[in-house]
Amino acid sequence: MAKVEIYSTVICPYCKRAKALFDSKNIEYITHNVTGNEPERIKMSERAGGARTVPQIFINDKHIGGCDDLYALNDKGELDGLLNG
Image (cartoon, rainbow, N blue to C red; front, side, top):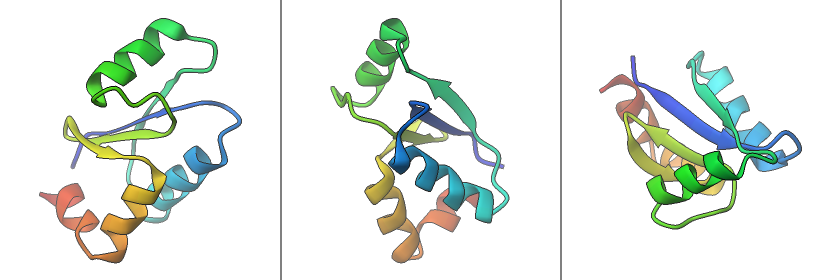
């Protein structure tokens, strides 16, 4: 099973949408809450090549991007391969 990490905030609708996609596929994920947590947001930004928006999603330590990027992978049929590979 793939290691999935999502950096998110508590009020972000895109974070909720990304998590909903993983939930629909019964994929477990680790949530890193960056709400008011600047050290964690800095860590996220460093891992994500400078990105500071949420969500930032990683699968097996590979940066996927945000919610739109995640859904684009799914629409192209590439997400399941990353999750199962």
